[in-house]
Length: 571
Image 1 (cartoon, rainbow, N blue to C red):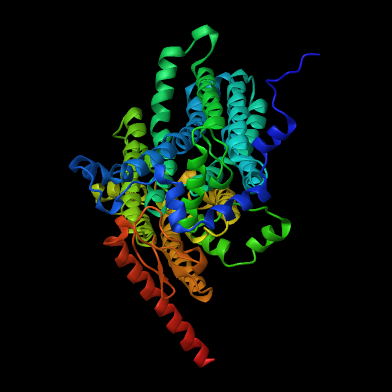
Image 2 (image 1 turned 180 degrees about the horizontal axis):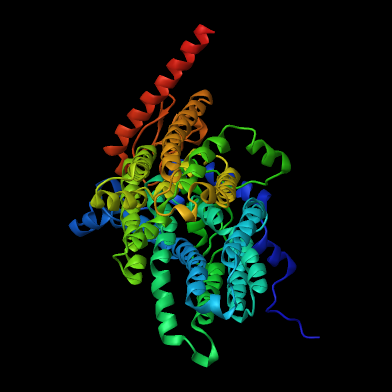
C-alpha cells in the first residue's frame, strides 16, 4: 500500500489545531530571561541601528500623521507592515463581508424576496431575531473554544461554512429554510468580532493599536455604505440571469466573496505571538514578537479552566467594562435617521437611502481621528468621553425635537461622530486587561451577548414604529443612558487606577500599568532601566507627548492613594 505522504501526521495535525501550553511557557521564559544586550544581539536583523538618531523624510513625517508605520525606522516599519498586510487585512475583509450580508438580507427583502417567497407576515423580523438568538448563544462559548483551538483554524473554518450557508439561502422556496440558516449564521458569526479583537490586541503596541482596532470596527460602516449600492448593481444587471432573481444572486455573490476570504484566513491569521505557526513570519520574527509584546506587558493565553472562567466574573473587571460597553450599543440611534427623512415628504427614495450614508462616512472620519490622536497621546478615556458627549448632544437635541431644520440634521449626524466608542473601548480594555488574555475575549463576548439580548426587545418599547419619527420616550431615554454611559467610562478609569495602586504596579515606557518585574527594557532603544521602582520613559515617540500623559496618570494615582488613605483614617 502506498504511503500517502502528503497527508500530515496526527502529531502535526494536533500541533496545527491545538495549543501546547507547556512548550509555549518554556519558550516564553527562555526569551524573556535574555538580557537586554542578548535580545539586541539575537534580533539584530530586526532592530534598526542608531534608532534615536533616525529622522524620517518630510513626506514620511506627513504620512506618519495618518498612519504610524511611515515614521518608523525601516526594519521596524517592515515588520509592522507584515502584520498589517496579513492579520489586519484579513480581519477587515472578514468583518466586511459578514456585515455586508447582514445588510443584504434587508436589501433582498425589498428587492423581490418578499413577493417571491410570499413573506407578508413577521418573517423579516424573525430573520433578524433568529440571527440574534444564534449570536447570543454562540458568543461566549466561541471564546472558550478559541482557548482550545487556534484562531487560525477555527475562525476561517467558521467563515467557510458561513459562506456556504449564505449561498444556500439563494435556493430558498419559503421562509422556513431561511429561519434555520439565519440562526446558524448568527452562531457561526458570533466568534468573529470578539475573536478578531483578541487577536489584534495580541500583536500591536499602544501607539499602534487604537487605529487598527477602530479601522477593524469601522468595517461595519464601510459595508453598510456599500450594501445598498451593491444590491442596486446586482439587481439591475443580474436580475433574471440564468433564471434567477436578483436577490438570489445577491446571496450567491456574498458566499462567493466569503469563501476565498475564509481560505485566506488559514494563511493570514497568526494566532498569538507565543504560538504562531504562520509561514509569513520567520522564526526570528516570531521570537521577536514574543519579546516585543512582553515589553508592553501583554500576557499570552493560558488554559481556561472552569475555576479561572468563574473567577473572571468574581472581580470588578468584567462588570466595569460591561457598564459602558452595553450602553454604547443600546444608545445607538443611527438607524432612525431615514424614517425622519421619509416623513418630510420632500426626498426621493434614492435620496432617503443615500443621505444617511453621509453619517457612515462621518463616522469613519471621526473614528480614525479619535484613534489616531488616542495612539499619539497614549490615552483613551478623554476621547471616549468626547465621543459619548457627541452621542449625548445629538440625543438631547432630538429629545427636545422642536428645533430648527438644520440643527435637527446636525442632531441626527451627531451619533455618527460618537461611533468610534467601540474601537476605543476595545483598545482600552485590551490594555487594562493585558495581564489576562482570556478575559479580553470573554469580556467583549459577554458585552456583545447582553447588548444583542437587550436590543431584541428594548427598541420595540422606546422606539415603536407607530410613533416614528417623533418618539415620546426614545430620545429622552437614550439621552439619560448617555449620561450614565459617561459615568461608566469614568468608573472604569477609576477602578483600573485603584487596582494598579493596590497591586503595586508601575508605569512602563508605554504608559501602561504593569507589575514591576514586567517593566522590561526596550530592545528598540539605546537605553531602558528601572529607577526607584518606576520605569524611565525612553520610547522615541513617547518622550514629549507621552511624558505628559505619564505625569497626568501618576497624579491620578497619587490622588486615588490619598483618598484611600483618608478613608482608612476616617474608618
